[in-house]
Each structure stands twice: as structure tokens, then as C-alpha cells.
Image 1 (cartoon, helix red, strand yellow):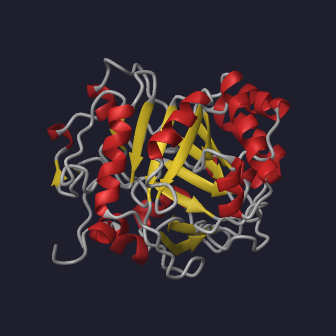
Image 2: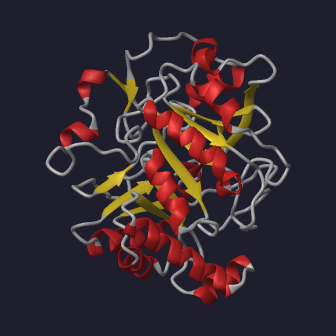
Length: 354
């Protein structure tokens, strides 16, 4: 396989190679609505520059939830990577632009999160905290904001405590606590993103979910298209929305979008045009950067192409893998991925031959 110099080419939303000069970056084209778009900044550029610009760090594998659809790599295996080690690793990556802190439930290691965010903020690296929101408080939210957190990202799939409790097997009061903390994030001026998984339990309720997101004071709503998860953590899980349900839900959300709300549709970039979707101010179909510009680091040192749909280990930072040079060295699994650029979301909606 031949390797092109870094930065010489990109891939468009259909996965077709094209020169960089052939397409402007989306966040340059859309300057009428954005002077700077911090959220999804990497995804609003056409992917294909293969160097490590984003790193998702699974600070701890432990979680206080047990979500049925969660595909967290080696969830609850006790792995943990502390702030000092994370800072040591990311300080050696000159190309890094964003660090996402996830887990498990990342706020189980809250002090480590604050330390990492502070370090990144001082060096101009954007940070995102992925949390279920149950362990936050006003003081914790204020500390994250003071540390310089770029945005906080929470899952939000249900509009009432009863539905939440029935699906997750949690006490309804947990839902009320999560909702309270979402409001606090918005009130404290912390850029807040709510993500909804578009799958069986939510596909018929998306407009109501969107309305609830707005009522909570949040103006960034991400919709994650569900995919088949058939790996060790969730073998055979499949609650993927049908093609018809996806088209209806996305169309309804765009039609009902409020002028002050931004919609980000994830895992749809490969087929958005095929289904008749188009970007417009406030409506974005984020390019997938996993494996291309972003990798996942588990607490035990494993480096994954993508925790969600490609939890394939391509190295371990404690066994000789170097994040700074991983795209130059290209382990075989990473090289194969970049050659094929597989997309399970596309495959789920468009089986072979369609």
C-alpha cells in the first residue's frame, strides 16, 4: 500500500478521494453563522489528513450506570489512567487539538478530569467531558468551567423519569438529578451538548426530545445514528432505526429546529445525500474522524481505532506504542482500516448489493 504525504489529500462525504483545494472546510464556508465553531471542529473539516489531532481517553472503565446499548471497551474492568499519566502522554503529541475525557463514568475520577482540563486549556487544546451527569453539582460544574472545559457532553434519550427508569433500570430520582444538572450546566454558561441515540426506543419521540433539550436551556443537540454492535462487549446488539424511521426522524428534527439551536447528525455523513439530507446553517452532518484523526486510549494503555464501532487494539502505550508516531508507523490494523474506511452505519442501512 502506498502512503501519500500527510495533508496532500482528503476524502469527501462519499469516501471518494479529492484534493484539499477541491473543497473548502465547512466551518470556513459557514462563516455567516460561526466565527469559530469549537464543538465538532475536527468533524466539520473533510477527513483524510491522517495524523493524531483528537484523542479520547477512557479515564476509568467503571460506571454507576449499566446502559444496555453501551459498548464501552472492557467496561468495569477496573482500568484507570491518572491525570499525571494522561498529561505525560498528551504533552508528547504536537499535532493534538482536542482531548475527550470519557469512561465508564468519567466523573468518578473528577479531580483527574479537572487537572487534565486545566493542563489542556493552558496549552490551547480543546477539551470535552462525556458524562451521564448524575454525579455533577453546581460546584463541580463551576470548577470545570474555571479549568477551561470547552464543552460538556451528556446522553439524553428520554423526556420523563418513568421512561428513563424503565429502560435503564434506575430509580426515577436519578433522572431528576441528571435533568437538574443539565440545567445547571446551561445556567453556569458551560457549553452543553445533549446527545440522543436514534434507535428503537427514541425514533418515534425525537421532536419531543428536541423540545425538551431546548426547554432545559441547551442549544446544541447531537443525534447519534445507531449502529450494529457485534463485538465482545455487546455481541449481536441491534436496535438500529430503520431507513424509513431515520429519514422521518431527521426530517422532523430539521423542520422543527429552533433558530437558536444547532443540530449535529453523527454517523450519517456517508449516506446523507443518498437519503436526501442537506446541510444548512445550524444543521450539520459531522464527518467521521475516528481512526483517521482520532483514536481512543483505554485505561490499561490499549489504543483503539474507535471504541464505538471498531474496538480493535492497534497498540498499547505501556508496551512500546508511541502515539506521536503511530500514523507514520501505521500498525497493520490501522493501515487496513485507512485503506478500506469501513462504515457500519452505512452497512446497516444499505446491505451489500443495494
